[in-house]
Image 1: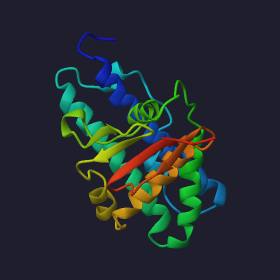
Image 2 (image 1 turned 180 degrees about the vertical axis):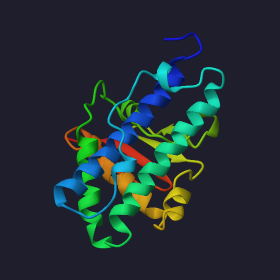
Image 3 (image 1 turned 45 degrees about the horizontal axis):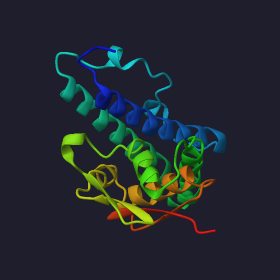
Length: 198
């Protein structure tokens, strides 16, 4: 790893890859269902090492472009599947949830651990955007949204901005489906994670 590419850059690239894996799952869904939708342009099958894809002369701008690209691809593939077929939303949400459930949870024993784990997965802009903040409340922990960095991409693709948060809910529910973590909250405002009581 280059001295210029510290942990935060690697984390951002990992978040981009996670979003792309969700996108690829939606492309697989379209193929499996035989849906007539051109989704090939949204798929990325290989993720080279970060050093091979980032412009070392302008790391921040390069990462920003990759983040923007991932958000556009996600909104774009959802629009390709739903714009003329809104009835597919449940199947799309189920595929997004399945993508979340494929992620292995490690070292989550408290609500704060769950928030920290989730923060490492979600692509909420660049760190300098300060789009979210984590607030611990004893038995629960919240990821509070300061800025909506997602709705505009869905709206630009002809979808309701709230659809992003509906799919985010599906993804997060999938991530913690087989864990002791309970998921709640209005995802546009906040995600609340708490440990299930025995």
